[in-house]
Length: 245
Image 1 (cartoon, rainbow, N blue to C red):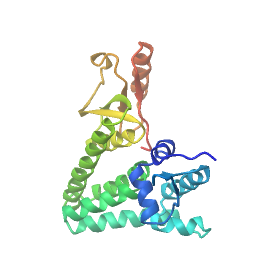
Image 2: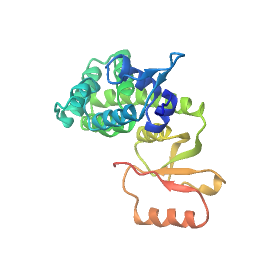
Image 3: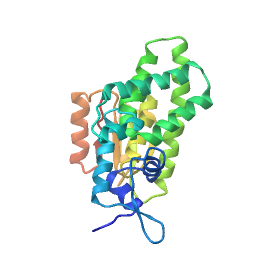
Image 4: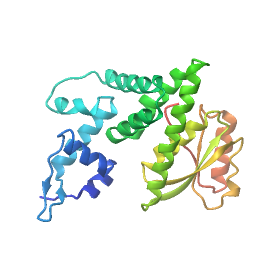
């Protein structure tokens, strides 16, 4: 039987080792064997279980309810994401930065960042944007904390071997989303640098030999699509980073 270290499993499954340890210690979701030296050893059955856990969490199920699901109980996935949204809103209403920061940190330990961005952070920011008074200040507070977390994630990613790339906002209005997308990319093996100021035109000729991602907060216009194809035909390594807009 082949065994894998926690580092091997983390890379293969796209899960932070800290998260794997939390799934084992805090939630009892994993029971890896131990080597003679006391190191965790995972087999193929463990890896399949991890993939199943990921699928439940990405569908919005709170990590605390996953063990029951693995034992064939049923939970409404939409209810899971809504509960996280409400928990975040509750922290915002108390206007306590330390509590809000702790809430976001807990979410990040327990859920994949892709899912958090799409199903928690972006929906909550959209809800707050509907109110131009108090909610606007709350959204600004949340944005600051999210950007802090994004920068920490980018810094951690640079300590590992990874592919380097530049992320550029292309005619965007929402700068915070640019940092969230940089955070997303950093969790997929990229060492990302961010052009903090969006550009009307990315101008890839200013960054020769650099892999470039461009991100827009709406579907690319026909002109943008044609311009992107033109740059690619010229040999620039420039790609549209697409997410659920």
